[in-house]
Amino acid sequence: MDKEAVLYEVRDTIAKITLNLPEMRNPLTTRLTCELITAIEAADQDEQVKAIILTGSGPAFCAGGDMNEFKENFSKSVPQLYFEGKEGTRLFELGAAIRTPLIASVHGAALGGGCGLVAMSHLAIASDQAKFGTTELRLGLVPFVILPWIRRAVGERRAMEMMLTADIISAQKAYEYGLIHRITVPEQLEEVTWKLARLVASYSPLAVKLGIEAFRTTEQTDLLTSMAQLCTLRLVAFASHDLREGATAFLEKRAPVWEGK
Image (cartoon, rainbow, N blue to C red; front, side):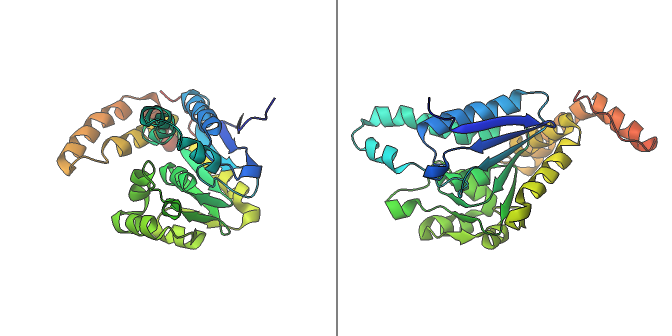
């Protein structure tokens, strides 16, 4: 039996998802994409999971699409391409749907769809040896599905530059662009990633989910509409056990015991 294209484990309320086709540089094959969707959804639906780490095995994080599958597309009909493509699109739709913090831990190349995975993650940490890029134009393609996430991460002008130059940029430049949040040396990447994941997981899971909900639902709305939506969402927090527990623990100078309710 073929090995799993995606590895999944849960430790200390943190799910670790590892892209596991290292000899191919972890491309987003149909199989890997399906397994990755299943893993992310499983982690997001698990009430015990408070943070998700996404990483890759081998020298690359994710080198983008699979060239062999691209070649097969040339003989397929437009309807077949459309319906098969919806599965890949669903992967990147998850970034707007999940409410468990997704943390990308990037140790090598994150190109094309791999760069899109970094951009759609809530937090991203990279080794100073990592490389990033929307390199699709080199193949006569456009980064169609990942473009909305790249635009949100780096802004309009940078996204246009990344797409039209198809440059591969350093971790330092990716940090300056806003694509990643933190840089560390390769030897400390795992430690720094887990430290951040544990920090996020230490907070009220309800408050974290509400925070992500508030952020996502107001991304495309005007100021006054956003304020109205957030005022309503705030009522959920005010009526929650976790807020009462957090306030009580603060006054009693002790660590809170979260229930996620």
